[in-house]
Amino acid sequence: MLLSIIFADMKPRDPQKIERIHQVTLTLVSEIGLAGLTMSKIGKAAKLGMGTIYTYFESKEEIINSLYQFLKRKHAEEVYVNFDENQSFTANFRAIFEIFFHNCYHQEEEYFFLEQCRTSHFLTLDSIVLEEAAFARINALLDEGKAEKAIKNIANDLLIGFLMGSVQGFLAQLRRQDLPLTKARTEEALALCLDAIKS
Image (cartoon, rainbow, N blue to C red; front, side, top):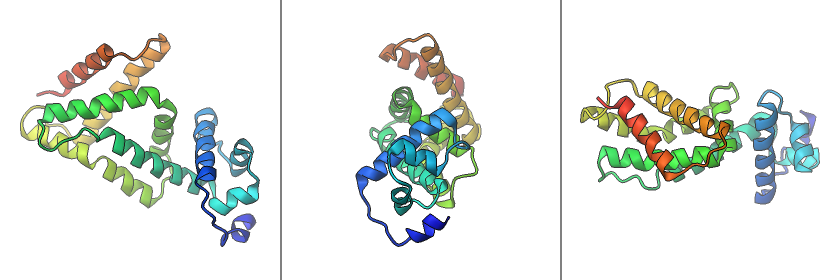
């Protein structure tokens, strides 16, 4: 706490150091979880002195939220890149699903971190608001699908939970069997998820 006060007014913003702190935090959380994370472990893994760490972040909670918000914005941009309001429900669902499925497989560490944070007590109000904003478009899409009677009239949080759980289960099975992610397997997962929620 004393260090955070001493260095409170010293806030040079070196993007490379922030990226290094973010990266080691991501790796440490995958290894030891959020509860085991400490400022000293982050500093040691990043090969940065504690004085340097505290010039950027006052606490591990601040690091967690900084990384969480960075990843949320990054993933939202990626997942919605092919979303088009002029497309049909099915076309937009496919566009979102394919990228999400691919990213979950290839960015496992990032998605693990986000999921750990989402169910933790570490998130600030700003992070929670960002979380809700990130899901706004998929919520609107699911509402559109229900209005068209294309999918079951079930609460969106349950639909999203089911879809995310299905993706995680499917990919976990691939990893257990050391199988590559192929277009055919992506299509199979998409068809299974759509069939499960269609009305």
